[in-house]
Length: 566
Image (tube, rainbow, N blue to C red; front, side):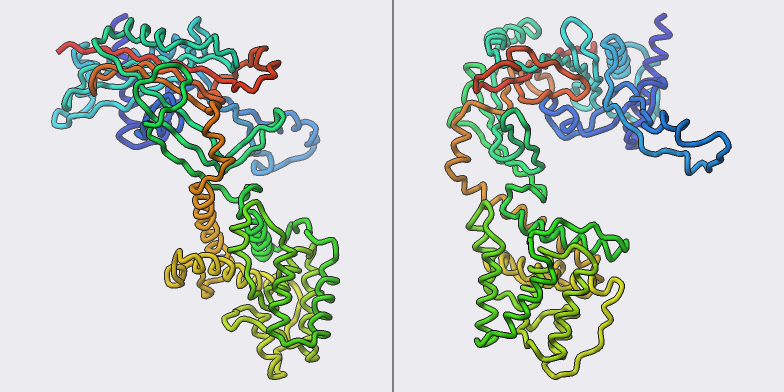
């Protein structure tokens, strides 16, 4: 029996060692166990701190092919099909799957034995390598558990403790969780948490540290409906000497502002510019694939009507071209409307939109087909050929239409065949020219950079597809800058959130001992479960509660230190 356990421990440690030394991402053990080598902080959330890699063991997740049930209906008996036709790549993954607590404990025992050279030379990791090679300790091991035991265990973990270069022990972790509740009477008290720590470790002195996170901007819940957002601004607080559960962070807390930006948030001041960029991307995709999924028009009037009215206004004007351009630019600004942050809009708005840029604004808000684009450009080119308009354009414009306008000044215009994808190509050039100037107007106007530093993003030498890619990169840069400027100058409604005791997470950590023999007992509250492989039930009080109290999931992390004999 003992030799079988030793052999299993050796085999398991060899698998982990291979995964660690070869820097592999995953492997399969015993057919139904998957071992992953991942970033611990990202997969264990607040349960594990640090960015070092860890091993995660989980049950191999089966995949469901949604087409399997349709096979008999799709193909008749006398039909034959190639492997490519019947190879369905779209499968539904069930997500991470837990192992039983008993199996998790077995894996951790093998891990512990493999790190203890005293147990048996056969298990010692040094015997797995040539004598001249001294192996380092294995990475921490965490195993997903099914919560089927009385304690409700969701994770079991192990991590080596070293004295110098030698492994002197192993820290064993157990994580238990409970479902969401608003009943704060069920929460553990700070004294109870300290007593639990004392029971395990018998320390002479303990320290209680607190953490809390507040959400200033991100996903919100309105009338029990969650409005998702990929962008977020959160504040993390850390402090020592916690006195009560769910206490407000004291003034002495260390605060960290975390800003995560994702394009396309409707509440962002950048959203109108993002929509314009999406239209530009749609045109670029259409040129690349030959197919375009047109966006819903903003204008109720057709693109042809808008273009005709614009040309008529230019023909009938009695003012100078410069005055007319300024007047039209003001009109376009009004049509664009205002977004959530008026200050940003005022900085982005330009009073120098030329003829092509104003035409772009009208067309991108109204065109719904290739026919629309072609018809609008035909009207413009015809007006130029007959001398009906002599529009003003920026000197550095680089689009095909700008070249035709310059030629029209001398009554020598090249022939342009507006067939195929040529109109879309010309419209994309117009949009690139306009949006590049928009970004320059903001970044240079705010003294945030120089044209030399922007040369990579603004280059017109590359093909149109690459130009769009670089413009998107510049947009992402501006998204980050605008989000920072918006939320670092926190207005009242954002500061108000900090005065409420509705943290999205709150935790207390009781610790004793010194590194590497420091041990901790942690208790965490969170508005979302910290475990992704368990589906929690919401208690009746949470479902029926009409109070404004936050509902929290609870998670407790306990640690035990196992010392190896010397």
